[in-house]
Amino acid sequence: MSIERRRGGFTARYRGPDHRAHSKHFPSKREAESWLAAQRVAIDGGTWRDPKRSRVTVGAWSQTWIDAQGHLKISSRTRYETLRRTHVLPRWDKVPLDRVMHSEVASWVQELTAKGLAPSTVAQAHRVLSLILGYAVKDGRLTQNVARGVPIPRRTRKPARYLTPAEVGRLALAMGAEGDVIRLLAMTGLRFGEAAALRVGSVDLVRRRMVVREAVAEVGGRLVYGDTKTHRERTVRFSASLVEPLSKRLKGKAPDDLALTAPEGGPLRLRAFRVRFDAAVRRAGLADVTPHDLRSTAASLAVAAGADVKKVQNMLGHASAAMTLDVYAGLFEDDDDSVSQRMDALMVTRSVDFGCTPAAEETSAEVLELPLPAETSVGPVGLEPTTRGLKVRCSAS
Image: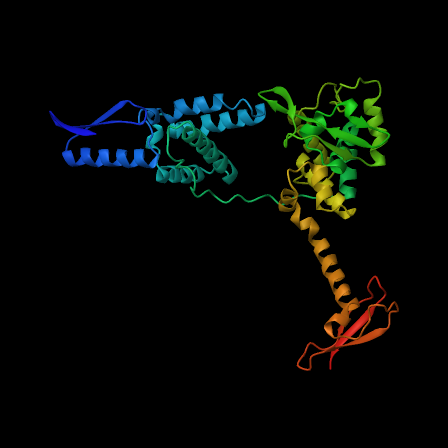
């Protein structure tokens, strides 16, 4: 490393880990020394990066990044490209990678919020920028991703809308020829894209099973078929009431044909279906109902029928049971009540372990006096008969 006096200042030089000479001109010797010291620390710490590689603009590098996303579903890649073009490039297109500052990213997020963009849109735009910068880190162009840790507006999830069986029936009736599609979505929990991509050969009418292998999305007016959202196939059971309408749909079709089609023929398209769906919602006297609400309705009906979290997860095709609970936690609150009631029953039937009157083998509904400490002031507490036929009243001794 060396510093040479040049006209108008000082030029600092060093040879980097890439075995190439690097230099930079400064107006003062102190600035040149400080820069060389920083380069020495970076080299010794293994964090040195070729400054020329980090001078590429965000706009140019983002194109390199999007071109490398061939592993994504076309719908996901299209969404990323739209966010990149609409929200990222207007602010960062001409900015070199190494000039993107954490504070400036935070200000940009606030600017997007101030424009009235939904919190979810702001979060997705920030994610795209973060992915672009993260890709630069992996390529050795940056030492860190400055977009990480930037505060993002809190996203609020719209409360799930659960239709009653009667409302499902009214909506199905209002949909006319597509009433069976309403019932299928409300009773199986399939995503619309999964139902629209369902093949005849994936439906077993005898065993009442359907194998969900793919989904379809409309991208730029073109239908694109691909894997499901979680990239996994799953088997979904359906009720006997769906056998007849499904059998009519499948009659005379080849195994590779679509099981569900539009009234005029051809594949189901979400945009066109939504027009018919919204009109049916109004005719049924309902409000604020979307096709996705039928998926939530399926979850609520399954829980009401006794399905546990794991069964609901498998039916809906969630990546994990934790995700199912995160989305539909409210549906399992009744289970919490029943658990607490069963715990009470267990405490009573095993009261001998707590110094109470032995009653584990009692099967009658007689009143048992369970002694409590003298200082207890709760007064008499009655319990309804448990599954063992016990009725207990505890009182202070």
